[in-house]
Amino acid sequence: MDRIYQSDIGQDIGNSLYSTIPLSKTLEERTLRDYPLPYDSNCSPNKETHFSYQIRTTCSKINSTKCDALRLSKVIVVGDVAVGKTCLVRRFCVQAFDTNYKATIGVDFEAEKFYILDVPYILQIWDTAGQEKFKCIASSYYRGARVVILVFDFSVISSLYNISKWLDDTLKCADNPLLFLVGTKKDMVTNSVYKLTEKEAMKLANAIGAEYCPVSSKTGENVERLFRRIAALTFSEDILKETTKSEDIKISEDFVRSSKVSTKKKKNSCMNNCM
Image (cartoon, rainbow, N blue to C red; front, side):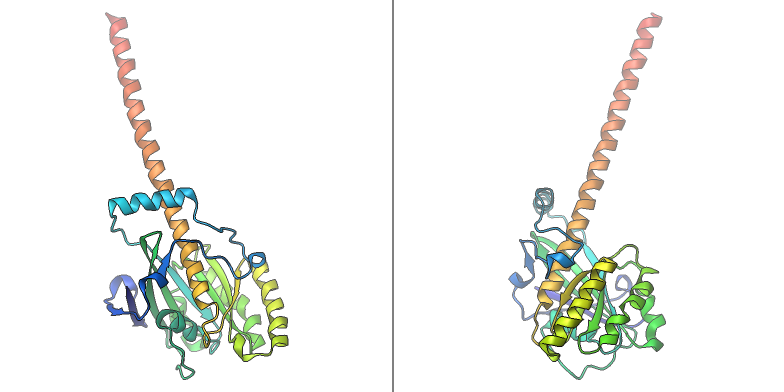
């Protein structure tokens, strides 16, 4: 399987060239056949637990026609400087962890390819700068985001309190995105601190309509679960939209066809009456 990677400050993926780099992961690690469950079902507005019959049927039709349409979802990762946004993205995409990452300048992105019910699907993950001086550059990339990952650091409680500010900024450009509140560095705090902070985080997640998930980029805990969950949710939305659209087209065609038949019958009737 391939991974698409691009480090970017001033280009969108639609206008850029990007190279394909082989991953060390096996294909099965990015294959989804069952619906990933949330970290805590009581702290998630997304109640789906399985791929519906409608989605599975639609996907089987897509596979049989070998449709090459590009299906992707834009995900932006936002939060205070040094909360671990880059570590989170890198842990998922290249299974690497490094404590010496430099602060992101502007925006970086990576694109991970999944096979969901055998249909190719890409998560386009944008890692944005947390520094105030790069905020204008980063915010210009919020537009069109389907998912916003709001990141806070378990070891810095102020980063949790600043989440509302980041949410307000993203909602100015993103139209009704799926929200995920993600706590990083859970391996760096004591169990008592973790539980107290998690309690506050879950309250906030429920208040803003976000799905909560704690992670550790160092150990990899819950990182794969988070992104697989995001992929499943956005993929399901896309497939249902495609299904609805195709049904609307069919209804429209049937209406036009029946209207023509009705008009023809009416015309013949008028001609018979005149004779």
